Amino acid sequence: MARDDFPSAVKTALRMRAALICSNPECRKQTVAPSESDDDKFVCIGKAAHISAAAGGGPRYETGMSSEERSSISNAIYLCSGCADLIDKNNGQDFSTATLRQWKADHEQWIASNLNKRSEGVGGDGGSGTIFGNRGTVIGGKGGRGGMAGVGGKGGSGFIQGDDGLIIGGDGGSCGTADGRGGRGAKGPTERLGFDTSRWGYGRGGSGTNHPEYDRRIRLLAQFRSEYLVRFPTDAPYIEAGADAVPVDWINQRLAESQESWRIELREGLYVLPPLL
Ligand SMILES: [Zn+2]
Image (cartoon, rainbow, N blue to C red; front, side, top):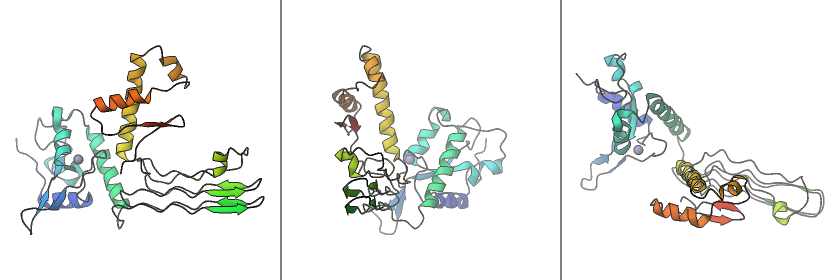
């Protein structure tokens, strides 16, 4: 059977729309670079992959599609060569047409939202305010916005020396934080000082999304937690009730066994992940 390959104009438009970055949200690799051997050439590890296969029997092949539809840009997704191979393993059963269409739509939206932005950079931290005296209001500054793959600044914090003040932590910057979470708002220091007031507020979190690697790490930790509960059933009721936590050493040992390069720490009763950058 003939293959419905993409014409070169389709390939060009596809890769430009994807900004030459892999559309798999867990990957997002840059796919183009200057050639090391030729001063006037480049290397590209990206591919225009078929969402529904170019020929019968291939991954996600749809018999109802016409030849034109099959070789049109609507049936193409830009991926790095690793991801292009990945989606076709097992004859495509692990990656549905719907998943790939979602990747493509999300990727194009992400690229569109990053037009004219620097590719990295750390947003500045928000400023902080101080009031000496009573009944003041302090609002911390808003954290700066990081670049496309940057890190949002921390929200500023307020400080009141005196009573009955209102402190609102600054808003978090609108990119991810260093451990890959979306921006977080700062808290007023009254919480840390243990003041008994319900009037201090949190800054709003920034609008940055979690880094895919952060989400992957959280999924891994959740998986280790379930493993632990199965292996140590006598501890399970305490852990499930929140009275105890899965030991950090055990989790770090599982991370080491899984060839993961990062470890967690326990700080104030909470697991802390290391910075991604
Ligand atoms: Zn990729």
